[in-house]
Amino acid sequence: MLSSENKEGIGKWINDYTEYALLRYDEEFGRGDFGFPFLKPYAKYSMRNIAPLCNYEKIHSSFRGSGLLTNAKPQYFIFVDLYKADDIREEINYHDKFITRGTFQWQSPNNMTQDSERGKDVINNTERHTHLHLFVRKFKEVESIPQDYIYLGEVATMPDTATGEAPVTMDFAIPEVPEDLYNDFITDVDRTKIEA
Image: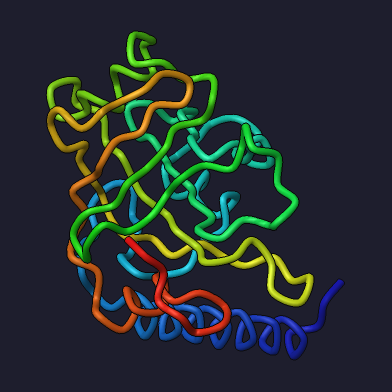
C-alpha cells in the first residue's frame, strides 16, 4: 500500500508529465484545426504514426507496406521515396517527381489499373469523395537510419493526366510546397538539381 507521501509524489509526477506533454504538443502543433485525419502539413510521420490519427481500427503494425494505403477508406495515404537505391528492381522503380512546387507526378503501385476500384478512387478522387494524403521523403534511409515522411497535404488528381496501366502515372495538384523544402527535395545527393 502506498503512503500518502508516495501518492502525492506520483500525483505531482503525473501532473508534471501531463503539463509537459500539453506544452510540447502546443509547441509542435499549435492550436490550429487540421481537420480529419489530424495531420499537420510539413510535419514528419512514419507509416505507423498514421493509423492512430485516422482511427484505424485494426492492428496498427499492419498499417504499412506499399506506397498506397487504402486501409482507412475513404482516406488514402500515398507514401513516396523520391530517390531509390541504384539496385532497385525496375518493376518497383516508380517515376515519382515534382513537376513544380504545386504539381507532383505520381506512379501507382504496379498492380493498380485505371479501371480497378482503387484506380477509379485515386484518378477520380474528387467525384468519388476519396481523400488523398501525400507523404514524401527524399531517401528511405540515411546512414542506415530509416527516415520519416513529410506530409505535403491533401492532394487532388489533375483531370486527364492518368496514363498507362499497372502502373498508372498521374499528376497531383498539391498545396504549394515552401521553396526551401522544394529545393531540398529536387536536389540530388551531389547537390545538383534534378531535371524535371
